[in-house]
Length: 282
Image 1 (spheres, rainbow, N blue to C red):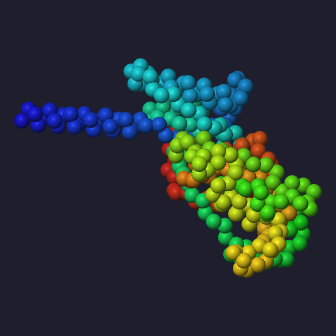
Image 2 (spheres, helix red, strand yellow):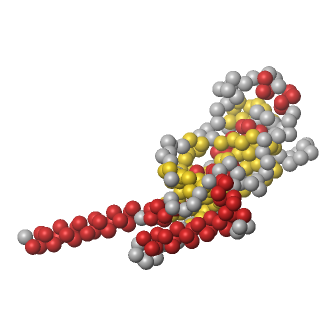
Image 3 (tube, rainbow, N blue to C red):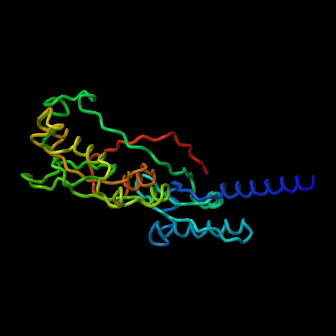
């Protein structure tokens, strides 16, 4: 009887330790802060990133005090957002997230999640016809820049050649992967690129579909020979890689979409699908 009670006690303690560890496991969150308060506070430090780093130090101290002085792993600041949203993305433990709720200016936090790439439907699906409406000759001869939030781009693709044009087709490309690596682990460079180069083909496909130059002699294994051309063949392209072999992290999507120093795009293209998210209000 004593042995049985001791065994049950050991099992209970092991389960309690396991639950406690899982509850305090670090995860990535996208945090929304009050713009008015953060702007005023950040001005005293020079910029918002320094303020968010100070916030990281503050919640480390608070969570350590709540744990009775036991030092926890430091939170990791991944990105700071300043355009459409004021806030940051960071890896936080459960206790650090609870401490963050006490910080002045905190509004909400949402767990980062991975979303999936979706394909592009054709112009026929959209009801567009060549030479009419949005695809008339006037709209086709434009010089807009389309930004693609996708899996990157293969710049040597014939749809992006600069021959015969006065301005470069591809005006810029960047890769963002901090959120992805926090969720899925370090990128395996034997199957993907830690750069804006596209290994999946999806970003190259969507960019050429929307803004590819005319390519004569396009076919599928010699069949259906014809001309491949994007819906706005004179538009230029800026590629922002946020998608990798195991998906796309929301925190990377946000920085790719809203980063202040990126190229000014007249249009943004995203072909992603996400699950319903539950926001965590302050």
